[in-house]
Length: 133
Image (cartoon, rainbow, N blue to C red; front, side, top):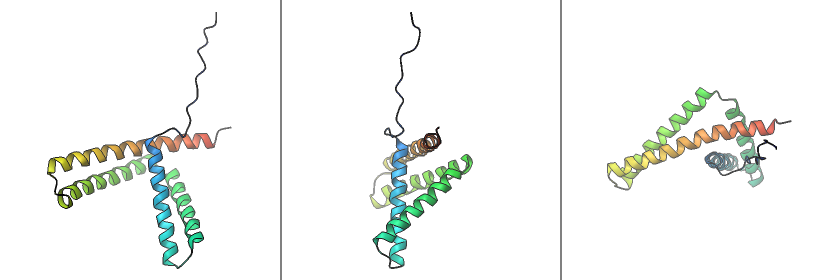
């Protein structure tokens, strides 16, 4: 009689997660940055793509080297800024009540906080996957 446990299926790195949304957002923002720099210097689309890739690799190298305290500090600052912007926009521009605006700001803060935490885990899993033997 065998007491071995049934084989477990390894989960894929590319499963749907909140960190992938932050990764996608970084690609879009770096693309916009590359396009902006290329337009400022009057360069074409090829240069815009190349600059976008260079910016994305540079940001990725910077994020890979960040200490946990600095990463979480930046995440808290960005999340607090988002909460303020959501609250301010919904109260002033949309004219919604303070309570509704506060609830929307809290929801946005919670979603972005979870996204930053999941992105940190995703980054660690990608590093383990890249350096596996």
